[in-house]
Image 1: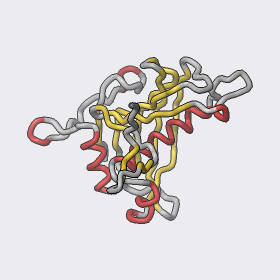
Image 2: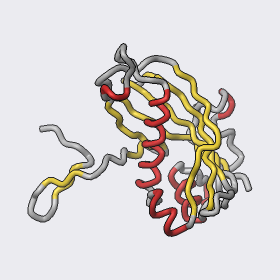
Image 3: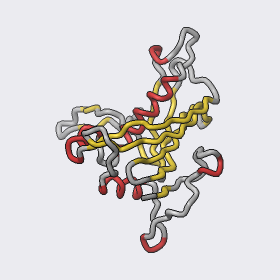
Image 4: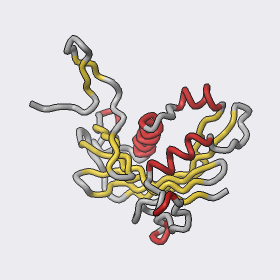
Length: 190
């Protein structure tokens, strides 16, 4: 019998399906994606811009998983994220009906923004590698500091605490290889 981690049952045993949020594997968030026909070009290959959509979904679900869904964050903290920069390296094509996973890792926290490395994989092989900078913006559209609770959750998420609860803020953050995820780490800059 196949089980799905995002299917739960209520007190009566009736299956309830919630949106797939992915899962944590160490300090890495993994988000599953199935390639639909609408994601592909006439040749059945995923259109390059759709990798950005897959990565966006993964970031959104990672935030939801750690307790910061976008809608609630806007309402509660008065801020949201906007992509400020994105670097993408397309390595191999994905095709119609492929099962993919998006790995989100190497969080580099700044005062009003953060950097994330994301990999879209099929069967453990990289298809696309992205480095994304998210800017935190207030309701007025201007830069805003990351909410303290989110900052703490992101640091905890990536296991950035060393011996005695000290932050590992001096680590390289995976930038030695062009910022592409070589290690799980978090750096915090103010």
